[in-house]
Amino acid sequence: MAVVFEKTLNILVFDRDRQLREGLRNFLLTSGYTRVHVIMSIRSALLKLRQERLDVILLGASPPIPAVRRLARVAQYRQPAAKIFLLVAASDQPSFIDVPDGVILKEYMYSNLLELL
Image (cartoon, rainbow, N blue to C red; front, side, top):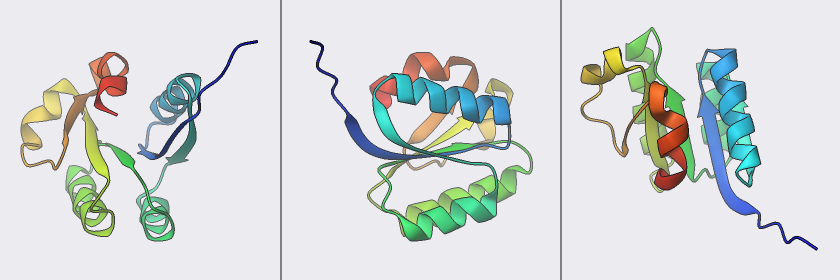
């Protein structure tokens, strides 16, 4: 009988791209993470930041980039113990130098994400 270990991190995924959100959610679920919240709007993300204690916050950085930067600052303020990562396209990386925990390139996120969690 196989033993399944549940990974208990509470993870928030925000991105406007449905395909990326769902792909990332499925990747995390198949990796054993059971508490994955997928959000598509900044308003919903702000509400989730108020309602729950999160361990990891993954914010997809897509235009408008200033709104995502503000969301990252709010997340850092409301969830100071959480690891906050921005998911950015390689072409947008120079715009995000002062990120709390780091930048994950969308092109390589599946190969790097599990080791960062």
